[in-house]
Length: 237
Image 1 (tube, rainbow, N blue to C red):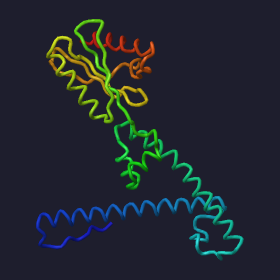
Image 2 (tube, rainbow, N blue to C red; image 1 turned 90 degrees about the horizontal axis):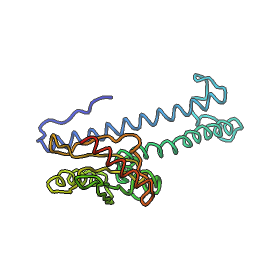
Image 3 (tube, one colour; image 1 turned 60 degrees about the vertical axis):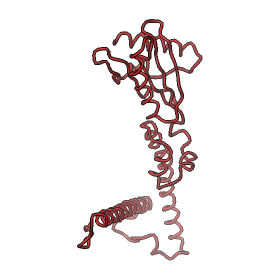
Image 4 (cartoon, rainbow, N blue to C red; image 1 turned 45 degrees about the vertical axis):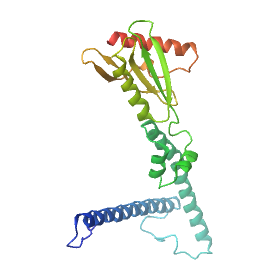
């Protein structure tokens, strides 16, 4: 792809603006080239299903007599192939959106990545993709049995930052917070830390597999999980 020539005599602001516009045009051209490649793949698969060699006519779906039986068969097969692609794309985009959500992406970011749709449209399209809540669990007290707390946040980053702050500040007072963990709406632990007396700071850690899912609150399994987590942290510190 040819580079766009920029006019001479531009000041810094004009140059940055021109470079930005050139980048947008280049990305649009690359996206169109990609889409054209997808269209060509669909067309070639259509010909394959009709036992037409790639180098044989028709070379385009628009060259046949529009009312001929051959055109009808070709267009129906073309529609079949395109529908197969759409059928694959729906679950694929849902799977990708869910992975992005688990990585911390919110609905505004999902909407932007999906062609600039609104946050509301992204939530409607993938209602379970992005987490709507993040639970911050904390352990307190210098000795066993430790106290436990939980707080609800709408932002992954906010929950983690509050957990770090609580652990760092908690050690300054007797009975303060000495460990924290954040789980997503599926109750999977996505982050954890504890106070390290050697560095006198919070250190981020990965919990063992047996602690990576938080049981439902109010259950005996949840109480057992808290006790196991506390014993695990006590063993580390």
